[in-house]
Each structure stands twice: as C-alpha cells, then as structure tokens.
Length: 332
Image (cartoon, rainbow, N blue to C red; front, side):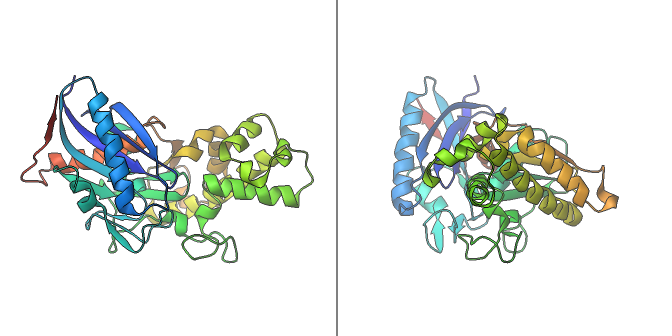
C-alpha cells in the first residue's frame, strides 16, 4: 500500500472528522470527535490531537505522515487562522496552524472547509478536468468553494465564496453572523429544521412531525418523512430548494461555471433536494446561461469527502514544494 500519507481534518460546528489519506484520495483510516464548539480552541486542539494520535497508533501499517490539511469555516488560508467564526466560539482570530504545530512538527495548512471540498472535487471527484466550477457545502451552515480558470478563488480578503451569507430575505431570520436573512439560515441542515418549525405553525397539514418536540426535530428525520410523503417535510424541502436554486442562478450570473456540485450532510437528501433545486435554478437563470451549467451531487463519498478535501489541500502544497523542509513523521 501507499506508505506516504497525509492527515485530512474537517472541523464542523457539530463534529470534527479526520483521517489518513493516500495519494489516490482514499481515506484509509478515519475517526471523529464532537467539536464542542463552545470549547476554547486550545482545549479543542489538545482533544483533537489525542484522538489523532490514537488513530495513528491503531493503524496496522508503518507509514510516513507527510503533512496535515484542515478545512474549517472562516479560515484564512494565507494567515493560517480562523477568524470571526460564526459556528465556533473561538473569538476574533485563532492561529490554528500554530496550535496544531505544537503537536505535529510537519507541514500544516488550513483553508475554509468549502474551499477544501472544492479541491477534493477537483483532484478526486467529478470536477477532474474542469477549470470553472463551484462546490456548495450544505451542513450546519452553508459555504462555497469557487474554482475559476483552474485556481481556487480567495479574493482580496481571503474569504471569497461565502454564499451562505448572501441575503435571501432582508427582513428574514436572524443569523449567528449578526445579519438578517442570510441564505444559510434557510439552506442548511439547521435552516431546513427552522423551515419545518415555521410550517408547523403556518399550515394545518397532518404530519408526524407534530408529535415531536421542537428540540427533537432533525434534518435526517425531515428527510426520512419526506421520503414517506409527509406534506410538511416535502414542503420544507421545496422551500429550501427554491431559495437554493434562486441564489445559485445568481452565482451563475457572476461566475458562469461549468458545473455546481452539492456536498455536505444535507446533500444526502439526493433528488428530494436536487431535482427541485435544479428546476428552480433553471427558472431563475438568465437565458444566456441556460443549458450551460449542470447542478449535480459531489462525486466524493459523503462519509469521507470532507477528509479527502482537506487532504487535497496539503497534498497540493507539498507537491508544489511550498515547504522547502518537508519533514514528515515516521510511524511504526
């Protein structure tokens, strides 16, 4: 087997997943820990490092750990920091690369989780050979990784691609970022649940969701009930798809990508979300763009895609020889 591995880490608002990834983009050994977003970053990284060390010890083969790639919301790739994170209680700025290097003296790189997803799609997914595409991640929140001319788009600020914080309704739901009506308050796993709660108050339809307390409803339950034909669950997905399709049509007007890929937990809903979102996107598209862009699910395994994306980040930089002294950690 490939003995030159990298570690990919995806830090989400709820869970953090990590794994050893080979050159083919296969996560050969993986694990997870609860993020516990209220923890101080130093406590989180110490807990994560302990879990990673256990993972490495459990791996049955010797290998060289060449580097660590991390995908996390609100990361600034150039500075190695996480700044003003909406879904993590980490304050204004955290030097995540420096924190990780307290435990691992090997190359470490960090970027926004959606940007990492775009790299994973470009190297190991359906975007291989494409030069212009968007990956939209639908999880606790919503993000996007944008590739233009074969290059990941960072923009002047380093934070390009925050589609989740474009406004869907100026008088809409409060967002953790401090604004109102951000798209991710509607189009995300949490947004879907909020839509269900609104519908339960607005509409008289019979629904098994009415038997649940508000704190018991999850996006997975909504999906399962939608598959079973529950009227409230189906309407919640349709409203989510409508706003997603509308805002993706705007993104196409700005960027004219060849394809848009949906990734993240909510994308596991498949056609229940994808088909109406595709229909609404095409309805909202300026006619010059119609039939020029496809909306499809990510080509990466949903279980390991975030890990593979983060691994693609550090693998790309190692191969570009960004780190003159690459180092590496040998394991036995």
